[in-house]
Image (cartoon, rainbow, N blue to C red; front, side):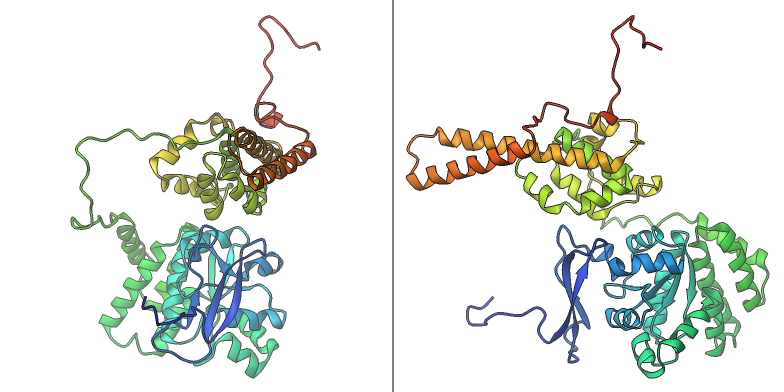
Amino acid sequence: DAANSGLYVRFRDRLMFPIRNEMGDVIAFSGRQLREDPNSGKYINSPETLIFKKSNVLFALDRAKKPILREKSALLCEGQIDVIACHELGIDHALAPLGTAFTPQHAHLLRRYTSSVLLCYDADKAGIAASERAFRELVTEGLSVRMVEMPAGDDPDTFIKAHGAEAFRELLGQAREFFDFKLSRAKANGAFESAAERRTLAGECVGLLAAMSDVVARDHQINVVATHLQTSGATLRGAIAKALQKPQRAPSAAGRQAEPEYAVAAEPTPLHRNIGFLCHLALTSAPAQHFLRGQFETLHEAKRWLEGVDLLERILSVAPDPASHAAVNTFLGGLPEADRLALGAGDSVAMDGGLSDGMLAAEHALAMLSATVLQRRDARVKADLKQPGLSQQRLIELLEEAKEISSLLRGIGQRSEFDDELPAATFKAKLPPGWKKRV
C-alpha cells in the first residue's frame, strides 16, 4: 500500500496458461513458477470472478471432452504441465484440476462425459493423499476409479520425456483398481506388519468404501479389501453400515450464528418474466443451458435493464446437470430463500417442464430479451431528450444512440416485450366454453 512501493505483478516469473471453460472461452489464467519460491505457491490462478470459479473448472476439458467420449474414460492428472505433455503426444483425454483440490463440482462435471476415471497423480506422499481425496469425490458421483502407478519420482511429464508415449500408454493399460493399488502399496511399505497398522488401514478403507454411491461396485471392492486384509466381508459390511449411520457433525456453538427471535418472511428476488423463463430453461434443458452459457455479453448488457439477471448468471456459472434431479435440487437448496421464492413463484418456472425443443425456446427467449432491452433503452433515451438544458454534445450523443437503437429494433422486427413474450411451446391455447375442436 505504500506510495513508493511500485506495482506488484501477480504472475511475475511464471509460465502462463490460459484457463478455458467447456466451450473454449478464456475465462482466467494460471501461472506456474519458473524459479522455486518458498514464499509463493507452485501454481497461482486469476482471482475468482462471476465466470471463473476454480472449483467448477477443469483444465483442458474443452479439448478433452470429445476424446473422453471416444476413450470412454478420463485421465485425471495433477497439473497443467502433465496435461499438456499428454496432449502433445496424442493422449488427449487428459485433464487436471486447478491445484491439488478436486471438488464435488469437478466430479459432477466429469460425470457428464464418462463413468470411468484414471487417476495419474505423482507417486510421492502428497500425490497419493491427493488421489485419495479425489477418489472420495469421484465415487460419490458413481464413477469408477483406477490408479495409474507411476514410478517413484516421476510424473506424466517426466516419464513421457524419459520413456516415450508408448511406454506411458502401457502404464495406462496396466491401471489397477483403487483398493488393489492402495493395499498393495501399503503392504510393500510394511503397513501389514502389525495388528495396529492393519486396523488403521482397515479403518481408512471402510471410510472410502462408505463414500461409494454405487452399491454393486462397493460390494465388489469389499471383497477386494477383505482378501488383502485377510478379514471377512461381513465384518467390513458391518463397519461400513455403522459409518453410514453416523450423523453429520453439527457446527460448534461458537460457529453458529444466533437465530433471530422472530423470523421475517423473505420477499422473492425481483425477476423479470423473460429472465425467469431463461432460468427455467437453464435448470431443465442441457442444450439450452449450454447455449446460454455462451451468451455472457448479452446477459451482462441486460443486467442494467431487467431484474434477476444475477440469479440467471449464478445458475449458468454453477451449471447443475438438468438431467439429474438431485443436482438441481442440491443447487436450489443452496440458494438464498429470496432466490428460491423467485424461482418457485414465477409462471415461467412453475410451468410443466419437458419443452419439445429447449434450444429453440432459449434462442427465442433470448431474442425477446434483447428486444426488451432495446425498448427500455429507447424509452430512456426519449425521456432524456425531453430534458431541458441539454448541451449540444449531449444532444448529439442521444440522437446517435436513438438512431442506433432504431436500426436494431428494425432488425428484430419491432417485437414488443408484451407480445408473444415466451415461445408457444410454453402454453396451451384455451378454447371458449362450449367450443369443441373440429375432428
